[in-house]
Length: 523
Image (tube, rainbow, N blue to C red; front, side, top):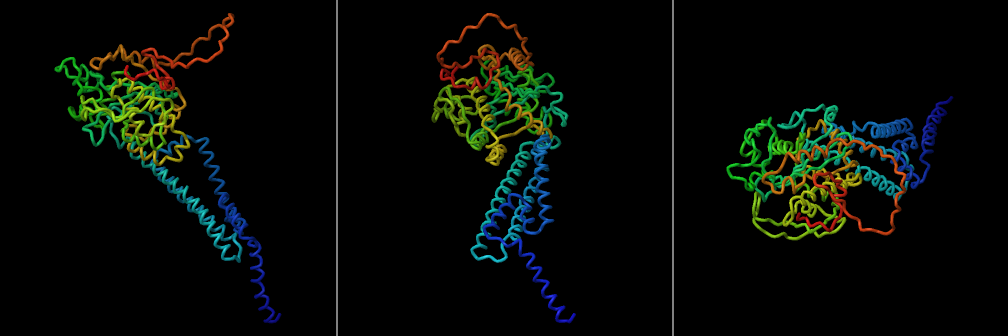
């Protein structure tokens, strides 16, 4: 073979090679754009169609594997998911993973388009392809960024509100098995405090004091409201505060009169000021004081507290888009009698929330619906507070959590203070899911009989009511069917009547919070 013949053969080889790789690209610009879209929806498919078969198969395998793992974990490993949601370290890793996956997804889309686009393109076709790829990358980058920010918001919330057991101090927190916190806890008793603090107030008043007693098996919950003006709040005999106040929190030297500085709502601030350090090491002595007193008054062991800042409460209502409540009578906005602790001088309310069923309230009006008391009784205020919590629980749905979680998390940072340790948060979340779908009842402590005034409440009688309300329910024995035919119901419509509650009995909050325009809020 001559030299010229061999040279001609070498020159012809590249032509054959170029012709071979041109075949997959023999497509129109519009088709290339369509295939690029498919590569974004099914990462790896574009690489396969563009000739990078091994790399495309690898990306497809990884994508499918991640989807299968996510489905398996989501459906069968709920405990692991809950643990992830409340672990700052794992949430940080999850944030990094979200960002990395987003960047890799964008790279796959860009690389696929480069392989899929025609070799020769007009300026218009190239511009259209570039704009479309840019739009795809933007549509991936935005949710990736939102997801990363949401995970970081959750991490910030957990780290800000819930401290680990080793990094926090409590004088009243129980020791539990972190693997199964409720193994020896048939009922969890949680103290809910509404702190009336702010820049225009001196000290902190806990105007809202409630205990949620939760059945850890079923989630059934009993809400018990304590009146803000109770005196003589008792302490357990084992507490050093019992030695200081053997007859309860009051001043005998002042006589049997109303003593505002010895009301329940003053304990949080006044006891730590008068007796600092008496309970030992604690991050929130005021909350520990109220836990001990409320538990002793109701005959319960209070496990944990959650302190709600009222300004943060307003933010979280706005974050979820408001709550829907029944307003049975005019509720004042503002107003002050000019007497008692925390007063800022006598003044009339600036307005009223008018009565009506199914009213949608924003954070400002929801806060006053729960707080308003000018001209109204304390029991009516307590009932509105329970109904506000009930409405808040019912208003939080998956769609709201997904779309507004960052706002909710940010508001929750300002809303909550608690001694619940990070280590048992997964168990708390599971219990919270049970509560949302379980029965929530109000326990009436019988004001007319047990505390017609706040000077000398009958705590023993209240303890009996609470014990009866939370006692395990026994199934009734089925009766023998009667052979007497029942009377046929008469036709016609009747005005629905709100169920009445026997003093001292428990009432379902759906009934307690129903619309009843006959109420006045003054009794």
